[in-house]
Amino acid sequence: MAGKVRQAMVAAIQAGDARGRRVTWALGAVLIAVFLFSFSLGRYGVPVIEVVKILFQPLFRYEKTWTSAMETVVWNIRMPRILMACLVGCSLSAAGAAFQGVFQNPMASPDILGASNGAAFGAALAILMGFSSQLITVSAFAVSIASVAAVMFIGRHAKGNRVVGLVLAGIMVGSLFSAGTSYIKLVADPSNQLPQITYWLMGSLSGAKNADVGFAAIPMAIGLIPLLVLRWRINLLTLGDDEARTLGVNTAALRLVVIVCSTLITAASVSFSGMIGWVGLVIPHLCRKMCGSNYRYLMPASCLGGAAFLLAVDDISRNLLAVEIPIGILTAFIGAPFFVYLLCRKEKAL
Amino acid sequence: MSISVRNLCFSYPDHPVLKDLSFEAPDGVLVAVLGPNGVGKTTLLRCILGLENHYQGQIMVQGEDVKDLPARQLARRIAYIPQVHGNAFGYSVMDMVLMGTSPMMSPAAVPHQKQIDAAMTAMKSVGIENLKNRSFVHLSGGEQQLVLIARALAQNAKVLLMDEPTSSLDFGNQAMVLNQARSLARGGYTVLMSTHNPQHALWYADYALALEGGEVVGFGQTDKILDADLISRLYKMRVSMVSSRSGMLICPEESL
Image (cartoon, rainbow over all chains, first blue to last red; front, top):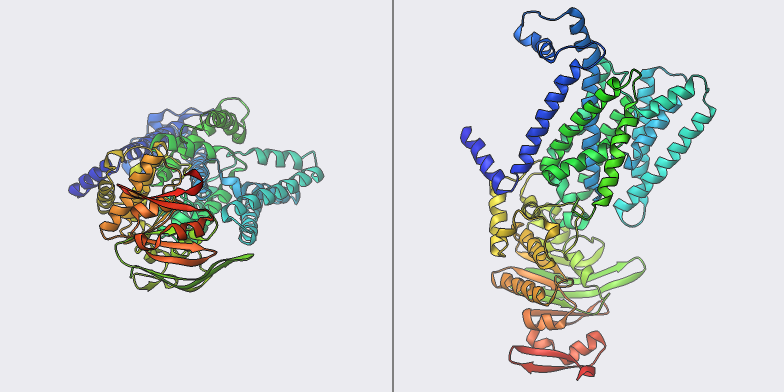
């Protein structure tokens, strides 16, 4: 066993992978730290040491040094929200990294195939119909998947380059749905429906409950696992179709799997949390800078980094002001300047 | 026969490209594919690589019909060495060469010691092992071409297809890459290389395949078939052959 680990380490050093490995472990450590710290933040303060004790209480049977209120806050109030932030951040970031590979473009993001615009339309429509919050989520998820399916269908029939056809179809279907959303906002009742739609579009994790986390985790796991398993193969897609095929890759099948999985996790994220932009663009980029472009490390690093980032931003969103700031606004405030920075240093090998 | 093409016809929807093309390339030779722009050199390469399936005729590589082989099986027999290109992502040379090992791995696998050894061997055989941790996009054109050759060697296929490998290289790097192609042929690989420059064919290739109007107008050992008449016919210009100490030189007549 120890010999095997040693062998793997030697191989990693020989392959110039030591950095990727280190970065992935470091991001994992950051995520754990942010995760524990997040429980202690909030109107009702809980010291980190108590957080750790409360979390591991079922395992180690610590002597109770905390109040019951602390336990309730940690398990029932903060836990679902923190888990949801991690899941959504992980999913959006992984989907962004995957789409960047499929479209051979480091500027691609999870909404490139219209998943977010579709979800927004689905949610707005459900709010207009006066549906419950569960049905709003279901409707957002369904329309999001449907819009990507429409994009894939149009892309299949487009002449010429497959990838360009898909991107153009994504832009068209996306703008169609965003026009639809605008129309719903126009006809929505301005006293209660319109604010609800607007607030939904800004993105927020405030409504997360333990049951939601369970529901969200299923499609996310179904999408994330194949992406992580196939991560090294995604490298080959970035070479372009012809080259990947001559390297023995069934590009049509691999691309389909990656797109379907990425769509699933994007739709699940957006339908539970609303429109949270920038995570899927910015985090894969940061990870590329830190651990290189090899998806073997980029994919897990993006997952961990995305989870840590969105969790940290959500902590700011619920603690900075007395009134919660929608997280979609904050990610844009942090993401947009970063995007400008990327544009200005484009020539230095993204 | 490493590559055998029989009665190959290929048309794009609006115009025919290859018309009833046949040739056989023996093992361990460097074959240069010559012809004017648009004659179908790249299309021929694409058909052999299995990238175009709507052709008539038969293409056999090492005795197997290209159409019958799935991508992975085909990639173990033929490797493609593309023109030097930019990649939007900053892969290291090692990452790039490792991608050549993908036909031997299951889709869910990541490269391990065996693949790394194969990549190291491939890099050593073209003399770039010192570049392994450099970023591919920061290399010179000549070095990038060597990386792409190493990737093809890591693929462990015995037939190599090169699409105008010298097109964006300077004079010195052109000679270096062509020498590399020739020494691969000496080492037992069958190399099929399209080129714009008949001089390269004359100097480096064992065989020449001359295409005109989508048809084969000459195929055979380079020194036997590649003469002033054939070159004049291919490129619609008058040339003369001048003998020099290091081989025949092709000179456009206007410049004499």
